[in-house]
Image (cartoon, rainbow, N blue to C red):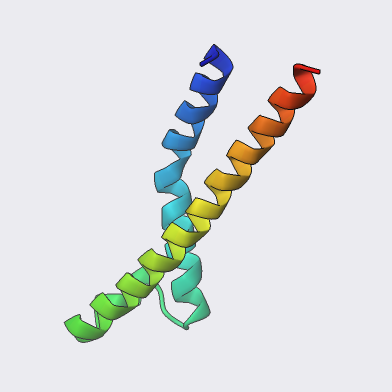
Length: 81
């Protein structure tokens, strides 16, 4: 594995929590809630919404990672021609 690939993975690892938080907040906002508003609702409802938001964020992050790996593979294939 090249240093570039190691550095790219490091960047993905570092940005992962930041993107996850943004995606969770985006999902909640789309449902009319915020992280703060979850604190004032019944625990079961808040847990359900957070589970939905986490699932949404996980799926979106997986998409980002697949696209990043595809772009790296295309780049590597182009460079190695």
